[in-house]
Length: 500
Ligand SMILES: *[C@@H]1O[C@H](CO)[C@@H](O)[C@H](O)[C@H]1NC(C)=O
Ligand SMILES: *[C@@H]1O[C@H](CO)[C@@H](O)[C@H](O)[C@H]1NC(C)=O
Ligand SMILES: *[C@@H]1O[C@H](CO)[C@@H](O)[C@H](O)[C@H]1NC(C)=O
Picture 1 (cartoon, rainbow, N blue to C red):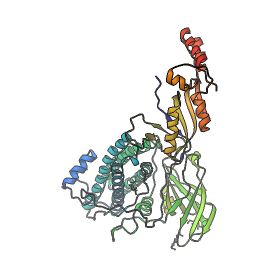
Picture 2 (picture 1 turned 120 degrees about the vertical axis):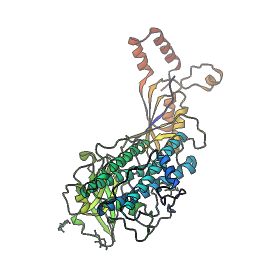
Picture 3 (picture 1 turned 45 degrees about the vertical axis):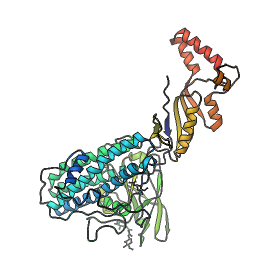
Picture 4 (picture 1 turned 90 degrees about the vertical axis):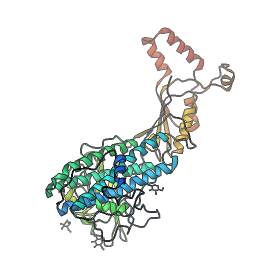
């Protein structure tokens, strides 16, 4: 018996991986601390900490860390705590949306539960990261980092996961900087700890990536950002509710004015990207370049092209040399003074004037499938994998009989915001559709009729193809099969051959 799983290949990805919103007060209500368990205002002996550890599936280190750390190392721990406070807020909000907004956010119940279970653990692990970083700062007699209020650039699960991938890659880049600082500053007792956190972030990003139909592992070597200015700027520009941070709290490292990425839907085939930046005074654009930081390579410097200036805003395009450089994983774009060249990401950061633009490319081909399970709610969608919104979709099925599944798929794809551009079936039986008489009374007639596939072709104006047909099958049976089987198939073909 043929199973009826339908694979959906999304040909033209429309996923946007980049978020860079200028700092203006949004309509959205900001996320505010504390959480219901009192977080982040928890002492080490607070019972809530034990609960968080349960939920995180593990504990904070119970070995004391050195009290005496360099002031540069302390700045880095402040940034780690600042970043982790945002991550807790983000995952708390996502969890809340998933558990309270019902099936709207993720139509598929099993998929929703897997995501909820995973985010529940991640949220607690991130709470421990905050408590741990603040404990290290406390040990060094520095005040703990206090939260701001936050806004999130996502509303659907898929947007949230795409954002989480970028955020996590940025955090991994920040932790690489942290380890090199701790090494330089002689605070080497933190190096195993940083390694442990980086590994945990990598595990979680594999999960997020897979949810979106990407391969779980992105690169041989994850992007080193070289300077925390990019993380600090991103958090300030994009997710911190303007004016909401505790007064007097300094989180070291300056904040750049933002660089907006205007091109949506950046794929591994994208050749140029459009950007803009706005500032009170504009620099001389002839002496500016765009630098891309990716993996552990020299930053790539490309010229600004088609520069347009309007009031305080500069718009330009720049090459996106994906193919020559295999730009995968996190790519940090920044407008720099001069034309380079730069040896390391830190050198590009030192010349950075606007940024960061955070890019994660998407393969132009992604895939999803419809889960075969009982639909227990009205929406009925059950797409697992890449979102279909705005995409051209090639539908793949093993075999078509009456075309009912194909029609349902057309509806499902339309409901999910995609457009079916073709059908492929493994085997075309070239069998004519049954007449009403045949269906109701079982009387076989001799009327010529089209096949289900042919009917769908006509009905929806969508091309279709098959890998093999009944004729191929019969031809193979001529040399390889039983004569009886072949003759039965030939009989069947004579009786039921479709007119198209
Ligand atoms: C949760 O839903 C609200 C309301 O739609 C939205 O503003 C917020 O960004 C969502 N949170 C996340 C993390 O996507
Ligand atoms: C941005 O504007 C400020 C205030 O006008 C100015 O001090 C600064 O130099 C400008 N930045 C650049 C890169 O030109
Ligand atoms: C261009 O920028 C570089 C880097 O800031 C600087 O060294 C150089 O003097 C600038 N050149 C001109 C012509 O302004």
